[in-house]
Image (cartoon, rainbow, N blue to C red; front, top):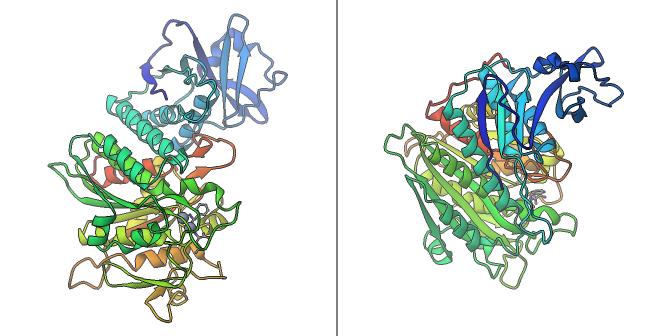
Length: 503
Ligand code: BES
Ligand code: ZN
Ligand code: ZN
């Protein structure tokens, strides 16, 4: 894994060994045309782009010989008009030219914000998961990115890019690791080892402690596995905290479905089922490394969902720490059971906002396709996350929590059942409604719940199609940046850009 060094220059630095210049090619009508400083280079001007197959379309890359050297071209279509587009273009450059040692990037950038987004895109794709390859493990070559621009870029923005790419890499490493090597105790231990950051402390709850604290959901899901469940509580508590954000993440290190066993195809992506827990841990670490003045408490709800003689039986009833009873009619709807414990614990702290994130339902893919994360919750929490996601360029979509669906998961003998068997209509929404039942009240006298939002990234957490923009194949690291941005906005260290004219 490489962390690249980024430098900003007003003019192109002298050619270094192994360096390559990158210029942009846009579209004028349907014709590809070199734009920006590249258009002043005779060697580039004289090329017949069409015959070289250079299209100029957004994100398309090419290498061309200008006579005395080879340069890289990045297609920018109609232009890099938003920071979201800049990040995508950066991702495309970063993927296509990661085998070059030094890149001198000279493309038109209309603001510092756009320049920073492009750099972020390049940095976050410098990742490869090679732990399980026996052959060639050569790291990616890219070491230095020289950005040629007159925009003034703050050092804090470059530091932030480094912190974000490190936390994305750590998330993707955890999520890509298969279940034989990443089991509950191991996930807890790795996170503990990574937590040596000022202001951060970690508590690991094993089965004994979980029983003492009545974390029934986590215990019930974990009881079928020989590798027992854990809860990891991460606290970042800076001296000058302005507000308190609680995060809850689903950490199923492997989801077989339990006794309600998954079919062979459906089981394949299930090592990714701990992505929510990995995401909140790494987001919390990034928030701490940035030194943001906001308290964060993160609850990783970790278990392995296995079928065995000790596993939970469909129709078992469990009683949660807050007194609610659930009839577990489908052991494959396990995410909401472990998350319920996390939400109860988070609610007891009465934070300003609770955000939970989980690979909760296959219904997220049915409703939203492969790239969007479903967002549910109260209006205030939803607006805050929508705004943070916009600023980060990540895709979330606000989904409803229709009250009538809650009536459909009432149990004959307990408060609720944990799924609607045989009827998948609105399954992502049912998941959200179920979780809301475990969000506590704002105060003892209040009838209002605490501010809460739920993110279902069952499909956005993992990209099983081709890489695009700044999203690689496999674990995506999706939502880490949105959660960090949310914390920045709650701590008011980052400008709110909801009505930004960049959109
Ligand atoms: N881990 C799965 C959800 C999932 C599906 C994640 C596909 C990633 C890709 C979850 O535990 C599950 O099995 N959910 C059930 C819920 C249903 C039984 C209410 C589902 O989506 O089928
Ligand atoms: Zn499941
Ligand atoms: Zn699951």
